[in-house]
Image (cartoon, rainbow, N blue to C red; front, side):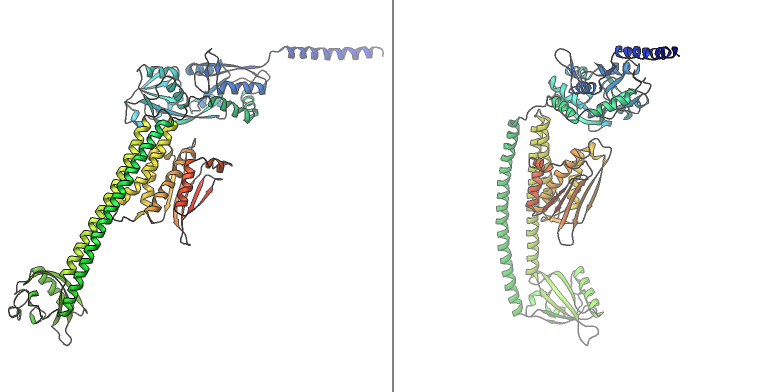
Amino acid sequence: MRCQPFLALWVVLLVSVPLIAQDDIQKEKPPIQIRVVCDDNYPPYVFRDETGALQGIIPDQWRAWSSVTGIGVQFDAMDWAKAQAEMRAGKSDVIDSIFRTPEREQFYDFLSPYADIPVAVYSHKSIGGLAKIQDLKGFRIAVKEGDAAVEVLKEKGIRDFLFFPSYETIIRAAKNNEVRIFCIDEPPAEYFLYKYRLDQEFHKVLTLYSGQFHRAVLKTRSPLRDGRDLYQVLSKGFAAISPSVYTEINERWMGQHIGRTVNWIPILIVLAIALGITLVLSLFIVALRLEVARRTAELIQKNRALLASERKNRAFISALPDLFLTMDREGRYIDIKTSNPAILIGDEKELLGHSIAEVGLPPDVATKMLDAISRALSGQDVVVIEYNLDVIEGRRHFEARIVRLAGEADLVLFIVRDTSAQHDMQEQLARSLREKETLLREIHHRVKNNLQVVSSLIQLQSIALNNEQDRGLLEETQQRIRTMAQVHELLYRSDRFSSIEMTDYLERLLDELSSAYYETRVRVEVQMDIDPMEVSLDIATPLGLIFNEAVTNAFKYAYGGREKGELRISLKRQNNGLRCFTIADDGPGLPENWQEKAKTSLGFTLIETLVQQIKGHLEVLGTAGTTLIITF
């Protein structure tokens, strides 16, 4: 019995000593550390300072992740092809700044994307005609080795590449005139083009596609030393970082982007030029209106003179009987009564008893008269014909009314009136109307041409600007001018000068915007439901500008990063006599504080002003996409 306490003590010692030793071993183990590789020199996401130290959005996010998880990070930036090679060889745990492609999905598990990266093609200003991807065939394109853009270009049939280890080496080669066309992600492209002062020499010709930055691990990865899966640790760690930390990091580096401040001098110069041209155009339009008023007054005076002449002629005719002719079925003159023999084709005695074919009437007049006789005898109440005829007193225009004589089976009565004065007046009025239409058409044509001159001047000035934001402002102004010019283009080509058919007008505007935003337009299904409707010039112009602002805003902001989208446009008549103009996209909608931001937005202010101009009502819905409803 005494041995039992000692046996229990030995059992406790045997169990506890290994546990204590194991705890000491656990404390002595070094902390967990992972290695991350990334593309080198990709500002503002990752680049080096003057001392060569890495900085940017990606290094700061990894520091935040390390702080949250307690796991050390060895962050190495290198040429992109080398980074991918080391990752595939298992020398690194994580690869960052990688695009997700079908080929890479065979080897990697990708975390959620964290940045949208547009990929663009740039060319030297001396090269033109590169409007679409197929136009690149036959050109050698500089690309970064291992870049996902190479796969996209190959899918489009592009095969001739010149490979470089990094984006900066591509730009340096461009500065040395070694390359003329290259494909680079837009953020580093803007940085290096400004850095090497090539922003005026090379221009973006098209956006190839929009990719996304991911972090990825190998599918064949081993678990961490503590048995956890690296993919899960990465995902939970980045999700645990506060949104405010992400915001602070992004603002820190995006705020240090090389974007330049707005240079108002060229803008003011362009505005002054536009104001001067507008003033000249206004004076020209005023002069044209005065000329139209003068000519209209002359036409009114001529019309009054013609009307006075017509009244005199009517008084004269009322004082004298019309020409009365009695004819039989064959067109033979049976009886002639008139107090003015000068309106006869010949002497009265020579006409009586002879047919219209025998007295020498022109064949076309004779045919008309015989046809009228036949219709009158067949039972038609009154047959009216008009004809020109050379009579004793000259060539005259006559109106004849033919009726069947009561009680006579084969006789008709012609009541012939000399209507030369009225006919001549109608001809002169028609000529005057054609002159006026020609003048109005010329006015719209010149206004349209001058607006296009303003648009061209703005485009020329925008080429000289160094800042994308400046050029964007001018391009928006240019598009608004083109919208107004389209109204005058339709009026110039139309037979009507007071109204515009809205279906054709809106389709033309959509075609212009589709050309300007081609890369977005091909992904968007546009549904147009326009009632047949004509509106006046003072309504069509504001509606066109509203359409331009709303559709431009949708193309720019509603479909970013999406494979497809929908845009609905309708113009309908309502039962209450009003018309409803609706433009709706299926984008992310409006933020909660959009009303405050709209106060400083030129586009929204312009829409509100134009709605007031047409005495309409504006309703904005921003929950499921953005919808503008204008009732007028």
